[in-house]
Length: 245
Image (cartoon, rainbow, N blue to C red; front, side):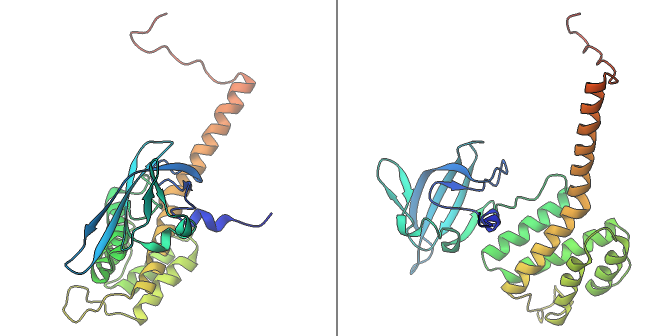
């Protein structure tokens, strides 16, 4: 069977199923609840689509510069674009199906989500500043040394030795294409193609720091609990206060 893992990197797989950004289920059915054309500017029109997950019932919003749906007993994506939906969207809320895991500290989640939102709207300076702020907050959290972006990344690479060094090496390359002075008028920001790589690397760094260790611990605990249940070594749970005897 052909490898289809690339579908996990998509928001919409086709006209019937998608990767839900809320319950994190893959290949789950969805329903287009509503669609509406509106004027983005005097000369440009847009199309808004509201999509509900058939599993968790939460709704996401998606914007396109072209009409993408038709109504025939309910809204549906046009057949000709059903397999190429993602490339026709310029903004989604959540900004990506990769909703930042709640096990990552809130301030880092918010910065990464804001950076992705800015990138979707092509606000490159804002996205660049948010991405750099993520690096700064990581440096503070792990007491990394350095007065600038380059030095902090190198220090984090040394302190977080369990994280794949490729991610830090990727983040270091940005020094070749931008100024370190993000708040000065001379700052041009990162280009969109660089930002996509940087945000992907930051996402993976935070996954390896905060999420993967907790998943491993949860799995370890589940195995231990199962073993204790099978061997009879698990102590009986005390009844909750107010419960029946």
